[in-house]
Image (cartoon, rainbow, N blue to C red; front, side, top):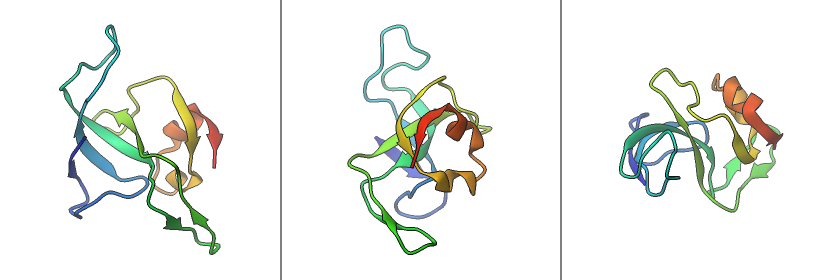
Length: 101
């Protein structure tokens, strides 16, 4: 659940860093339920226009947990990740993803 978007806007878009609380977690994971963490938005249900005129829209909202320096906490990223993250200097997330949309 999103607590605050760090860009100063009301909402967050693809590639934005947010502060969120963990709603569900695995028993022996790196993060616990209720913990406040930094995240990068990698999928958003709201459509976004690309530079070439096409639009990208995902079925769900998804984030990747990162530390304060912006490095991913986990070692795997499930599902597609948009290539717009490359422009926002989030290349480490792209290397962990299996499918770049």
